[in-house]
Length: 359
Image (tube, rainbow, N blue to C red):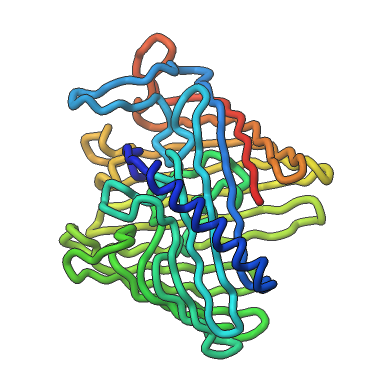
């Protein structure tokens, strides 16, 4: 999980707005519907029910919050998510996607601490070589995991441990093959994970995805920049419609770098109760071993720690706006939270209300 960092992108917003207006005008003048412009904006309010909501400061002067150590939705009170602006062109053979993000969730998503572009979430071009083969080159969001960066694509607003500590994005080249009506295959060669605009030491990572009727087996293997050992991750993502109103999503993953890593499992049961409302639960178990990624293991001398989290989320739709009330409970094997008496504790209950607008 990337720490939230500060950046000044105000000067880019004006330039972006002018560019998007120009793009829209061009599309209308030409009458070409192949140009598309979409995006989203999200905000939220959050409070801890069993712990302090006061921001704290460590010995090095870094400000941190009493929150589950997962990505996004990690501030108390009223806060911002991100603005997401996506421009794309879809031709018969070729096309591009330019996906830009602003705001705290956007900063966290593009990994500013590793020198990535300030606002680029995705930027890639593609070539449809044939009806069954597509080549894509550039920066694209990861193919591992059940959840994604944009809150529009997730049922829950907060994110899981497995998503937070797996890769977010890759830069490289990938080939997507449609093998049949049921089977698909993706093969990729990429920079080190989350180094989205540069390769600092010639390290490359291989990726593969085998799909069958909405079920996906994902594999990642290769050298990582600044790491002496190679990383291996295998991940299954899928789900089943158990009825017209009930869906069960599934995600499990295993990550290992020279004997240190993590694994986890999560279920995502979701029920649609009306045209406007649905409710879903994320139940997750996450385990670090031999230090893992220092999310929990840093609190244990042996580097082993685990956590259970249960997140109940409602989705109420009003036209293009979705309201997401969410109750979350985390229970860790280590005392990683602060209770209402400013004492260390292993559990935390929190509530948030998010508003997500998409167009």
